[in-house]
Length: 158
Image 1 (cartoon, rainbow, N blue to C red):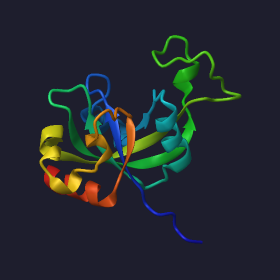
Image 2: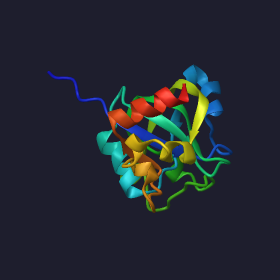
Image 3: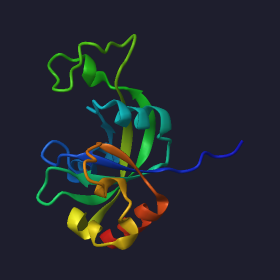
């Protein structure tokens, strides 16, 4: 049996809600990635993310917004239980345990960058010109990243 090809992702989080420091402080430096309420991002998690896939952790709505480190997929998709909790900000009354609409994965911290990579810094790298993150109008919270893009950003981040 052949091993599935490793994929690379960028996952956005607002640092005031959940930061890379929160991930570092989590038990085993592992946490579930919940609250995704976009179907395309959900489909990436549910249908494509595999154990060991590598992730760029991106702080959005930050000053500046930047890639702050890396993680790996530590558990493949499973139903996002926050969708069923009326007290949770990610509650969705149309989702239920019998027919879950939303999914999540677990990620584990791999590294925190010594030099976070802002959008401005990334835009200055010609080999990143086609990166999904840098395209106008792209707001997706989970995005595919090429192996080359991942490698470049990790090298820049230290």
